[in-house]
Image (cartoon, rainbow, N blue to C red; front, side, top):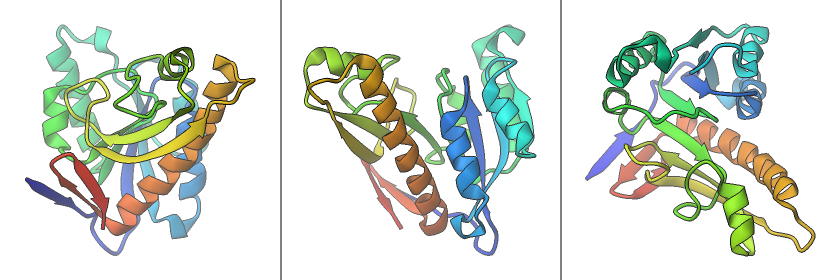
Length: 211
């Protein structure tokens, strides 16, 4: 099955970014979107908890922020519905999970099928989950890295858009490796979001191509 996506021509493409923490990936996207040639407008930033620096970054940049906390709803399904409806109100062409520490629910995945992406700090399918750099370091691999992928119901299991490799150096620690992966991850995220919004993208089974 092939699923093609393109954003409407003639305007900057609308992106909603979701965060749970400090928002360093978000800041990279905000910085890139300040250049009109990038072709992307960050129209809202959402968080799953109050007081995140990511939402503060958005407010400093003049971008609306919102909080949708799981604990404010009786069920996970009600939270998923509220999050989906809030995101949809901004009419995004793409939803970017940039350090958002919650799995998307079925309603959100259906509403933004093929248009919700996540960035992860390992070379998937190796080392999914919360501790990618640590698990890669402890395994003894010589290449770590970061992956951008289309969201699906699993944990870091969606079709891969792009990957960037980061060598594991002899004198690395988990901390130094993690920081170098973060740097590479930010570059990849900015480049790929821009390309997706300017060129469009196609999902064919497990394969994702630009254009």
